[in-house]
Image (cartoon, rainbow, N blue to C red):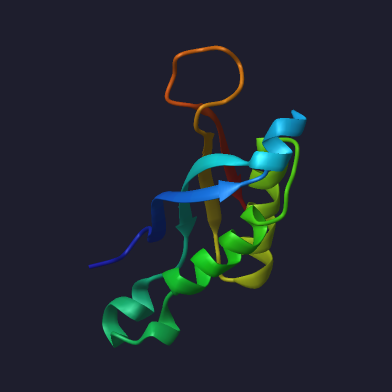
Length: 122
């Protein structure tokens, strides 16, 4: 049996953050949802049952929270920073896929949010 792909996923992580172009968004903040899918070689962890052999999802969350805590105007900028940080801190990462959604964006529409979706690979 050969493991061909492995991923660690943080699904629909909620944040209150201060991203946005409008002054109100930067002062009051808004609610965001993030889904992050990180390609990682999981074969060793599958056999060893040791956390040192995997991408620790608590450490991954801490890194993402640090990036979400830094205000930006654009979702694209936040998403790019998250992807770069993940790839820099965890060198065994093979890919990063993420969706970042601003819930209740100030655009006068009745919708679940505005989302950027990005895919990165080495």
